[in-house]
Length: 293
Image (cartoon, rainbow, N blue to C red; front, side, top):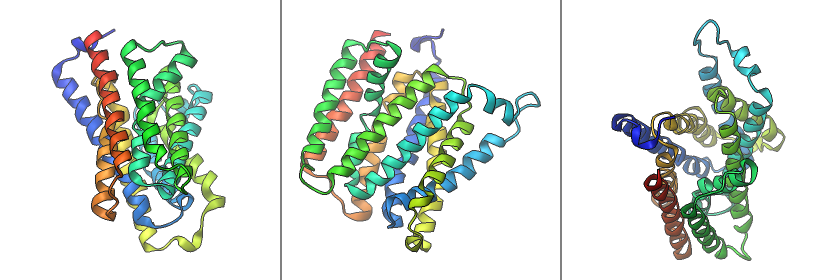
């Protein structure tokens, strides 16, 4: 097995670029949701329809005569279904959260996803986190608590709780990816988008879908979201996972910036403090892991 120090620097730079570019594209989700100005479930449906088309075409793209779409679908179908459902739940919870809380609150909470994944791996896979990761988990808990403390007793608390649900689903999906690394990524992600489209269909407010919502949903679903998820999921092929995880806070910083510039939604002092703690915790986890490798 190749260790992090054995990975050629050129490959690592490709991985870093993919991770940074992927998180930058995904960070626009919150911007497009707010731009669409429609209920969360409606925006989730529009995004899901678009990403089902884009990711479905990527999954169906011919690769080799002995690697058909049917054959890939039959490979670990239960795992594929589990990851697809978790992916759909993650996306839906995140999108609805953005419509019920501030963008900065949501993305700061979501920034703790890599560390929540470490907890899930410890519980479900028996992977005991290193001491530096345990410290980082404690820091993340403090950071998220700081963010949510400002929402107690306000209508935005349910949005923050949905963001927590999003990172739990994301963490469980990471564990499933680890257990089944050979799952076809485009097919699995496309399946998740299709499940989300079907699941949100009964909740769509058709009267809220105007040209603005359609444009925002199309830009998010057809281009930005699927491209970002594909780029980020490809990064570990070139760089160690710990180094890829360093770029997760790109979404937190960028999404907060988009909301500030486009909607004058400046983060509160508590959110800024919590965000700084969460970002520092991820750096503690990943830097410590690299130094111990």
